[in-house]
Amino acid sequence: MSQLASFVKLMRPHQWTKNAFVFTGLIFSHSWGNPELLLRVIVAAIGFSLMASSVYILNDIVDREQDAKHPKKKNRPLASGSITVPVATMLGVVLAITGLGLGYWVSHLVCLILLAYSVMNLAYSFYLKHKVLLDVFVIAAGFMLRIMAGTVGVGIPPSQWLVLCGLMVTLFLGFTKRRAEIITMGDGKSSHRLVLEHYSSVLLDKMIGITASGMIMSYSLYTTSPETIRIHGTEHLIYTVPFVMYGVFRYIYLLHHQKGGTDTAHDLARDPWLLASVVGWLSSTLWLIA
Image (cartoon, rainbow, N blue to C red; front, top):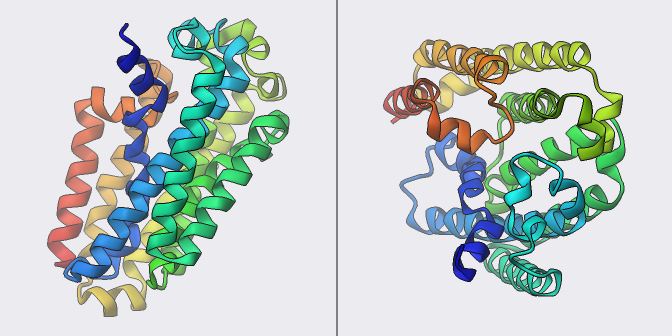
């Protein structure tokens, strides 16, 4: 692997798809026709992407010894030794400073949100990732901060139902990630991630079921909310719920039968049925509210 390819792999650009959460407020507030607001949201998403890459680098530095024991993660640049820790540290600092600068250009609040995201992940890397349940809530908080950056960070008031749905989605993804790690590592799960010693398959399956149900219910209630109907001028968003349900069920299927769940972006790219459900939901939603 070339040095440039190692740097790109270290930054994990495929994970930037998670920053689509930043666009939630723009889409559901009918603000996509405002060029200035659109530019600010795009810049906020880029800032989050760079800050997220710096966080991934930090995690890889801290976890490089554990990653070296993982069947897939052992090929990461730091775990394999293709990039040294000092060089990775320098790259992470540059990305973080650039991300904060872009956030400051958007608004002081977006800059503070990015800073909070960075501090939270520092706490996660060195302490909270070893605390059962809190580790998943920190992952979920990272996604919620993305939503906040794209709503209150640019002056768009978020819908309460949509925020609740976002929380359920992110907790669902966090618990499925832990479940996938248990499936992948088997008896050696604690050697890869100490907190996995406190999780069991049964416990995680229950939490996945609860958060999946909460996600579907909160989104369904959002589509039928009088405020939603007033803002979008349609009562038909309820017909997008089947796409959400199928996507959730497909993701659980991939988790248990196709070794999915460890990387949402990768699962989305490799499974055409999951991708079709997301595209179907997004296109039907945009068609109805536009």
